[in-house]
Length: 190
Image 1 (tube, one colour):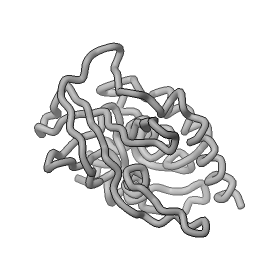
Image 2: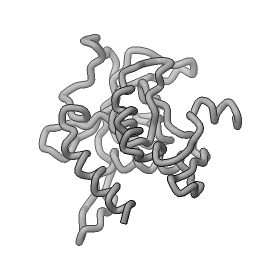
Image 3: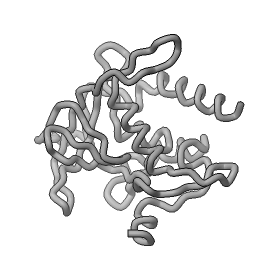
Image 4: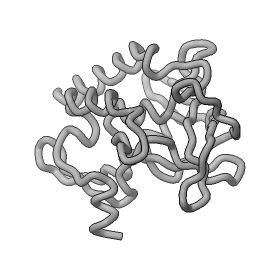
């Protein structure tokens, strides 16, 4: 019952987030984002996409690694890296709703804007795709943090700290239990 309530709360919150997650175009304090790419995205993990053979890192966030294990609020181990990856996939896929069951139909068109590359040569981008409201865009970076499937990567940006605090307060996603910060997990296990 608690899980159902959390799911319903998350869905309701998703639709009420127009001022946080919906935007016409990504911005960063008024600076232009000179480079961009559009197309169907292949989700690599919770903070990495591939569009038109360009590997893109989501700006300002860090998601659990693919094999990272976290603990739920009941101390049950689960693969939070897989959960993060699947959540990002759900944001980038159009679904056909048949008798209340959403069935993945096709990938949505994703647009990513960037102005810098990381040390591996990947664009560090703010990415968006079409929302459920006609003409709206959802910002993937924001929603990953807001729903607790990524953390604000404070070392590089404070842009998503407020959204992280909201997820933490609601105890959703990785904030429902115990986990290592992704950068700490990488240091330990990679």
